[in-house]
Image (cartoon, rainbow over all chains, first blue to last red):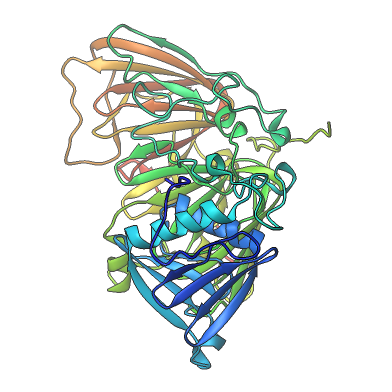
Length: 328
Length: 165
């Protein structure tokens, strides 16, 4: 959780723009009015600060997620579930050929604390890195306050199913979740549930579409139902997925509404492999050896389906599991 | 304020996207459409549309009244089209086989205590709790997406439901 009081190792005093700089191993991160500057011993990289902060937000909120979170074609992280690689050019064919790529491994808590401190300092009051472009202010300019409330949102992770007693609550106007402007036509009725006394913890249903229509974030898969390691992680998507996700296991997408176009490339090199156009009702696997980025013109509902088994990356690496879910 | 139209699919009105291959095989994406699958399925057939190791998501054409079923683990039913009624029963004598995954069909009507009912329409998700019996009915053809584990009644026919070229 980022708070104003958090200070981490490798944090500088504010620069002339009001922003602190951060170091992690031999990496340094600095920002000015427009850009994030990342330096390492054999190279440097510049990103516009808005996409940088949007990517940083997802990396933290998802706890480094499954596999690789590419901020762009150069910078990113790889989750080893307890420790995390921070890399520059590791998954860029040309950076590797030029031998200017760099990778360092950090304990999970160390890199997370630094990233949280950076996000807390670099996000200004009017900017929400989780919001769609038309629903937030600018990320640019000199330092102008903070938006700790936005950058410390917790990711919903239901234990069994949203709406059950002692589990994640439903969303409503009263709880601060208004219907999004692009989902104003989504039916808000709930299922009719009749429960006999004593079965309140088992007879339960809720409107997932209503729940999603009230999401205040984009590109942030949250767990709504759990069948052992099978996790339903629906999310609402608008504009561009701020990261390029590199899989370490098969991941599935089920398009619940509207349309998303996915650009799919090779995980290691970034060479294009396919475009996947998904319309309502479409269902597609993302193989374990690809990276992908989505584009959604209208806010859409996407069901991301994950297998949370910690065994999977090792099984795939050892050839005990395929990169694809089925052969036919 | 500008008005937006949210597009959902249905058994009678869906449009499929697809895989536009650059340097890959379309089979790797196991691409299908649940409404397309359900429109060609028999009532209550449990057709896998997604699989990740032992876990599956099944597209089910709900039409008429299903058999009573039970599983040793939770399942979750998301209605994607139409309306269904789910009856839940706490069985007296029937138990789920913990060695088996997925749900198993029961012969006839199990005895037990009524737990409640759920009437669910498009977008509604229901818990089908472990070790409880459930029966689903739909007066009009409807579509359920079931989060479960592969079982003996899971139907795999990938070549006929997925994009192959």
